[in-house]
Image 1 (cartoon, rainbow, N blue to C red):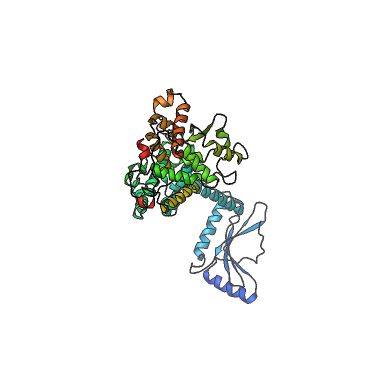
Image 2 (tube, rainbow, N blue to C red):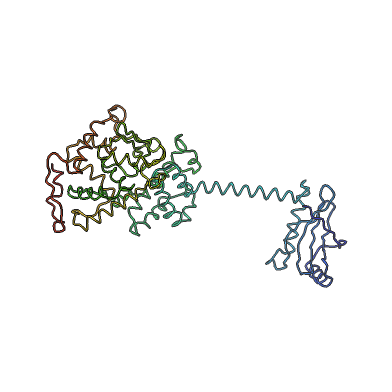
Length: 475
């Protein structure tokens, strides 16, 4: 809005500090504003100082708009010391800049300044977006997006947040293209010093994968275009050691007595989603819980007696997981049929607490820990505590002991299927072989082995007795 102010007749001569002090006293005495104005040529605008009864002294710039009306703009507060405002020299210099703008053809200063401010605001917003997109934090966020719904997405997001964004905020705001290996080394060193070597190893893997995507973005059309904005030319995480000393592979497998004790306790539990999920993982030959818990009703073929899992593990499988079909043995069929009745439609998860949200592997893991603790109290443990992840190793160990070949075990467990022969030429579905192997496995769990293995139950007094550790495995 144009401000039109009535002013007293202008005084001759340049405004001085003494004149401002005198005008201030006069304004307080009379209770009216006093205006002091510099002389100037017509059309150039005038610098003026407004002194109010309250003691305020404000530098103003008055000029004529194209329509003949006058507009007065505030230059700034006056302070002879320059602490709480501008000195007279600084005010006059700024007013002089505005006067020169008028001479360049700008006729509406208020409109001009609004346009300049908007342009600067837009420039800052663009710069901030580009800066955020180009930072290490932006790169890590973009990498998490590429993981989609994979279970590793949650792990990566949490690790980046805790151990980089919050622990090293300045590093997180650094352009990704400027990150040096030494900076990432400091991040991992902090975790190792805190006794979190395994976490450091996993974080290194996530960082390496993030930078690998960004470094390929300029040439690889399969990489999302957003990664090209980071302008990463080399992968700083490649120079970091793999920290293999912290990646200790577990080798715990349940002995036959332990397996029978565990299975007896599991099968005796009240029917619920966790119990059924763990039973299915085991009876299906040690399937990965994260993959099994993603199964929906549509993945069942009860007429054929099969269940389909999607296996994204392995190179280039993230976007196109391998279809992994596993036979459902007779002992498991009632469990699967019961879970199917809880599914509202074909898209509903097979294992859930409410028919909508998939069960988590954490819930299944907690169930296994409870059973393990109960077995320990009952003297049924020979080789120490075990976890959910150990059941997969246990299944393969016992399948091998039952004489199931490595090729069939690989088909059951969906691992080691990356060779050219299997990937391009071998189209046999191995259904018959898998059914026979899983039937042997179920017989072992339920104690129906035809070879009549003599399994001696463990008691408290025989916890350390290893003679019966794997009697069945030797059969």
